[in-house]
Length: 383
Image (cartoon, rainbow, N blue to C red):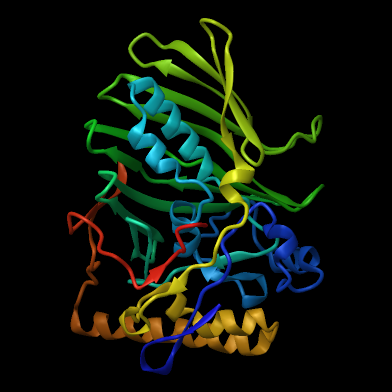
């Protein structure tokens, strides 16, 4: 969707990633696997790909900031409200775990989002939920997220620092950073991490989320441990999840978790053997609506959909030469601004977050404002 923006520019907003995303990605170039292997031919295994620049041929028409925020504001069911309204600590932990699974979205093999430019923002509202992201560092790439819902009394503060490495037949991205979900009425803070992103080229091309996720709530003494699994040589079983809900003080298992994040996930009470479905991907990730511009005059110049609008427009048209020119223009402008800051001895400061870093804890991003205002880009509430 293309919306007329400030100063005659256009904001290009595309459909969110969903269960049928692979089949709907008709903008991809042909022979992608061969092209990718050719692109990586001279890269040594174990190399950090953080600063590796992809040509538009390998980009989806949206920024990493948009992919980071979409699972919060594009959903078929309001699972965050379920977290807030659950009556007991155990019910809330279970709901938070189910919500954390819902933000795991399928990606498309052979293409990746744009690397956000320094200071790029993404601001979207859905109902009372307002989500704001900012690229607070470019080298290394660090993204910060702040989301609030005053009606439901919840707040999210996330910091994400992805580190991709090339391993010959695959790329594995470890996503560093802490994710916090605060349920303010109950006074509970849930802290969690992200699974790793695995892109396989051989023997069977594909992309999966893998690794361990841990969710803890110190106020209730409850937690969850999840293991995301991709296919192996002995099993074609994809996108499976196994795990447990535990009492943190005793490490006692209260529920066993089993299923697939692209279908259904169940929990079983180890005390009485009763089982129930806590997550259904079809309900969460089908029929998602594309964000819309509500007030084009108020769309920020730093908004992802504005920064990359020309690149996205040419990718959607499959005009790779013009897409490459448009992407080069964005990158050259950023190099120019950096040189100007360096010549004046200026250090760039994020607009919406205070950031810090130490070797022990990594990056930390704290929002400057108490709550996120309503955005000019919104998602229809019935999505």
